[in-house]
Amino acid sequence: GDSVTQMEGPVTLSEEAFLTINCTYTATGYPSLFWYVQYPGEGLQLLLKATKADDKGSNKGFEATYRKETTSFHLEKGSVQVSDSAVYFCALKRYSTLTFGKGTMLLVSP
Amino acid sequence: EAGVVQSPRYKIIEKKQPVAFWCNPISGHNTLYWYRQNLGQGPELLIRYENEEAVDDSQLPKDRFSAERLKGVDSTLKIQPAELGDSAVYLCASSPPRTVKETQYFGPGTRLLVL
Image 1 (cartoon, each protein chain N blue to C red):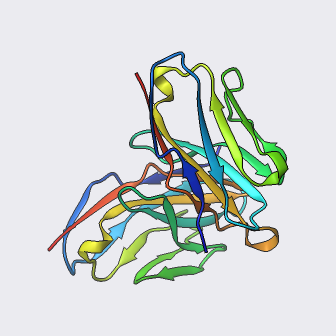
Image 2 (spheres, rainbow over the protein chains, first blue to last red):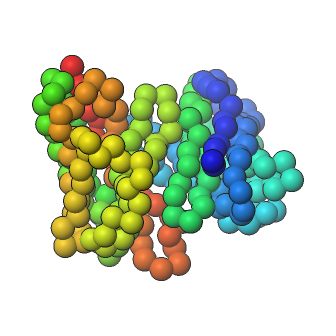
C-alpha cells in the first residue's frame, strides 16, 4: 500500500540556519504530494503541494520539488525563524485519500 | 471565513464509556473527513463523506465506532464503548467540491484520553 517516510526528529536549528526535512514515498501511479504544518495546539495547515513530477511547491519561504525518479519530496527553507517551530507532515494523495508520514518536529532557537 | 470547528477540544473518560465528537465543516464544503492521530504518528483516515453519503469507511472500526452526517453539513463521530487504545486526537477536515479536492482544511482536533 501507499506509505510516506520522513526523517525522524526533532530537528534542532538556530535561527537563520538552512532547513532540510527529507520525505520519500511509496505509491503506485502518480500521487499528489503535500507538506502540512501543525503548530502547537492547532490543526494541520497546508504548507505547499505539488501535483506532478518536477513541480515545485512553495510558500512562506519553504520549497519542495516532486522528484519521481527518487520518489522524494524534501522540504527546504533557506533561513528558518523561531516562528517556524512546529511539526511538519509529508503526505501523498491518490484519489481522495491522504496518507501521512509520522511527522518531523522542528525546533528553532534564537 | 470560519474554519473547521470541532468540539469538545478535550475529553477524558473511563474505559467502556461512550463518547461523541462533533464537527462543523467550512461552509460550502461537501466533503468531510474524520482522522485519528495517535501520539507521534500522522493522521489516519477513519471515514470520508461526500455530502450525506459515507463513501470510504474501510478503516472505521465498525464494532465500536459510528459516524453520521445528517443533512450533509455537521458530523458526529461516536465511540461506544471506548477502550484504552482509543486515546488519540480525532481530527475533522473538509474540502470544497469539484476541482480543488487536494486541499483539505483541518480543524484543531479533539484530544481524547481514556482511563
